[in-house]
Length: 113
Length: 115
Image 1: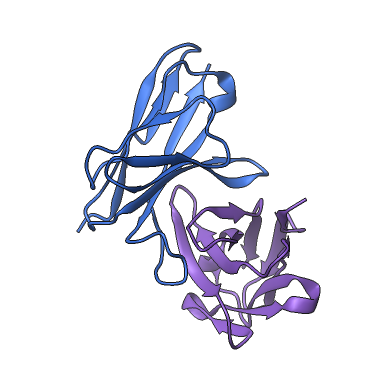
Image 2: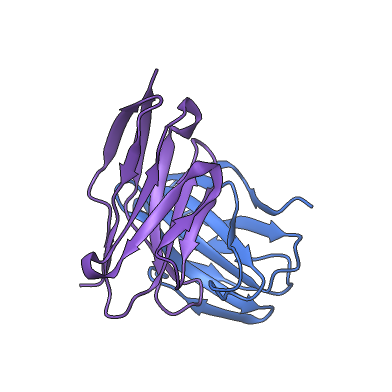
């Protein structure tokens, strides 16, 4: 079945530690790939997106993501987490380039002082 | 430039009641859409519109109606609310709906509780 999987429901990291959030997709073709962040009570904000080309994508707020075709993955990383990064993170795909996006279930990030 | 606005922020309904969730954008975007967000499921597309007078169904359209009489507004109607429609609803918009060309903007959400 076609799906977007975020294996980790909740992750806790210490402030200043590195972060990696996992995302896997299962679609026939490589879709357009996205990471969004949602702070409590807020809408979604786009962190970064991948369409083609360089498989390492830089985003806002110091985030980056790496597309690995062989693993059907698009993992989000940040070298040093700040307390303000505590939020929910969603991986999403757009298969047909028409904003009909399919989202993963989300990973909630807690940052310890 | 207010972006994408949604009203109300929170609503409680009784089963069988009807209501309309409002969404407006002032960016002259042609493409607008509605999502619902449920715990453990991420966002799912309900309906979308590629311009005034044109709407189509998304992944989970049952129980919802939409219309698009103006570019700015895209209301979502629940004709007979059910507890299964308890969710957080997000409206989004973009110029063309082409993901490779632009970013989709999301509103702050409407939290709906159906008793």
